[in-house]
Length: 138
Image (cartoon, rainbow, N blue to C red):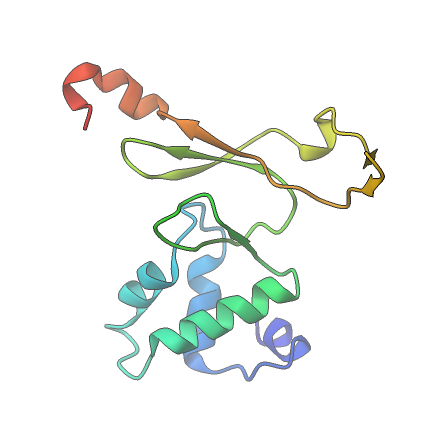
């Protein structure tokens, strides 16, 4: 983690190390606010700006990806490879889907545009919320 931060010109502060540790293997797609709230008790000097700036820097260099599936908050995914996301309309959880973007029938050139990457966001109900039935609808 220290080498990763230094590689991108960021000092390896305890707060930044904690942010990276929290992201490592994290599949909940946390927001800046969620990361800040989780780490603040252990790091009283941590600011939301530090979390935001660290995530921005890591996303800019492709170490993580920012996903805009949720209109209420910016979320971050530590998995930088292209993949699909699903947002449950009931519980608001974001899930990774095992659909490789490369496998989707999207031409590399369409209408004169050279497509280099794209995102696919799907919305609906997760398995857990669907099994609750109509009484859980909000």
